[in-house]
Length: 265
Image (cartoon, rainbow, N blue to C red; front, top):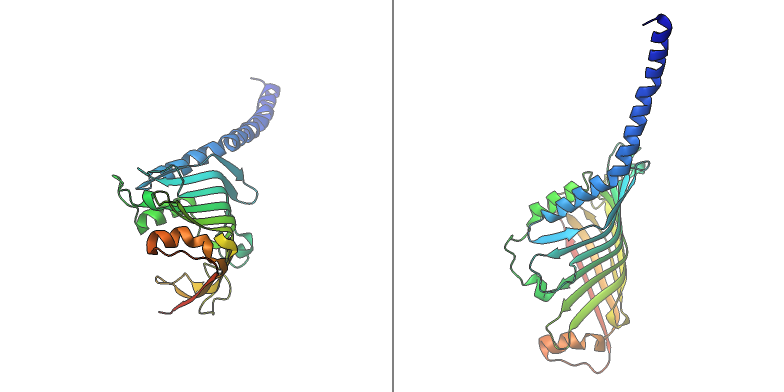
């Protein structure tokens, strides 16, 4: 090989390797959502007593995030097909503002979170056993490897359903909004309760739900000071529930529930 041929070969080589690297990264980026989707589905399938799946995964590399779309989780051997947990969209990302404070933590935004407790489903015994705290913690760590510092829910729903009651009992809180911030104590480290939590929603019977307080989740047994209120509920909306469990039937009136809980050490 002549000197001229060698120069041409090395010149081509200089462009071939970067080109191969770029093409490899492009191929990896194309298949990355599928890889992550399969991983998430595997984590959900290995949770004892439950089964679940996600419809799709989107990756946003620039902001260090991935978006789960169409997630559901249900009990094995459930008597109904109503998902215990259903999430329209879950955005899991690095919280960039915390990086300037020397903390690598994550933030989670859940849109259209439905948690539906079906009495008949929860009474079924699963051959795979009940997930304990360690199972849930491991699954959460597998899906969100970074500590969660901010947690937000928009357009959520909490429901208690008893299908076999006559008529069917369906108690709901809709339009649920919840924010929990500074859960890993990134800022305001000198505060006893550094993490504010707020929630609001609309209940059946036109009632208003609210939750306001502060917690310290860093401790093994968290300290907290929380206030809860459920106001101006048309009491006739809970007649199915009161009839079934207490043989009470309300003709008219409003219901209000108020509670506060404080835990320290």
